[in-house]
Length: 249
Length: 314
Image 1 (cartoon, rainbow over the protein chains, first blue to last red):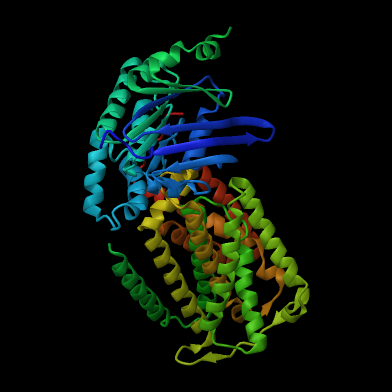
Image 2 (cartoon, rainbow over the protein chains, first blue to last red):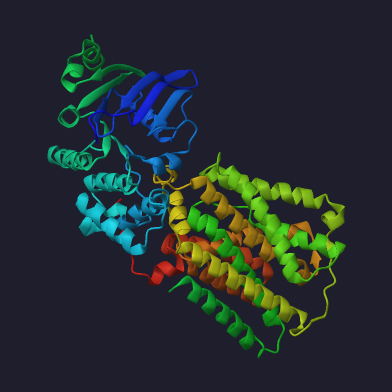
């Protein structure tokens, strides 16, 4: 990657989303550069998940535009966005319950592979790729297990592995660490760092400040559907508006 | 086993069963066998949408009757051979299935199920008020006494339904072991996550509803020739919808063999009850067995001999 980047990987301009009379996202603009690690913070109900949903196509935005990798994402269904390189994990893990852990990874491999290399993956390719992904998240001993037999952290790791199976350029991890213990959080951060080092741009939505601060190169803060801060993490957390949002007057 | 091998084995099984059946001298077995095989098709078709894709269809009778009444129309106009009737019935009910698939855009879970029931009622109302196909009076179809090669016409109908059952099972199994099958399972388990994993969920659901609907219509297409008198209350009989749901549930919904086992098991019990006890006992038996299986064997017959999977702690 050259230091002089051309257009950012993700460009969001004037994004708006309403639910009836409630404004969930109000004129959000932000850029994500290729290879960046960005933290997205904000109090509960500030619109973080809605933003993720609008970026990934789970919900449709009402105003503004989303461009990804030089292409307009406006109106594209979620599966097309995944195939174009934007993958997400869900805040509440949504594994395919009737499939085994390794079969969970087959789904994105089968349905996105054709759109990346142009060729079908052979079943040997798929097996190799699955093994690699499972080793990456340390689930290689659980390939044949069912999601219901996994622990909370294993479920989160499966969620991340499944997102990674789509071979994304940008990974949006929506609260991948909620409810995990101290050491488990470190586990997930190390995993995300590893992905980033391999060239994946990562946006981390997180409440746990320790995690966000140690992971992010840049922090974006949403409050009540508006972007109120965007910059170096240390500056953003000292921003009076951010302090007020979190701690009150 | 490769899909090609399976198709070949299915074809051989169809021929073998039919050859063996020729040894029977009593035509009753062909009449009874036809009904059982018809349920194999309906249960298998239902399971493609209900079991693989996770969308419950209460409107089986509607699709089945679309096939049957398409045959009535063609019979009145021209009287083409049965394979043509099956093709036309399948295309028409497949198109209605496609329409049902569009419902999945807005309706999920129980609301989708209610929508399918409404769809069947709408079709029944249309047919009941359409004089050309007999309206509520019903219509008589004179079937030929014999068919070339097969001899007795009921032998021919039996063979047709046997071939259809083989086709339905082979299609179901092919889907199960394909990329499409993985995609449908993902839709069934977590539709949002499926979409996020690159699965074009709407397209897959449309494929599923279309194939499922088409097979149901194909099962219904020969019906007028089987019953020789068709009226809306028999063509749209609730028993078709109930059985199409009960049979996969009793047999097991996760594999192609489940609906086949369920249809053969429940179908034979119903036929036996009709002959030996009373025909009105049929649905009662289905109901009792359904309750028994839901309580004692939630994974159906196939769940009984497959190694029991560890249950999640509740």
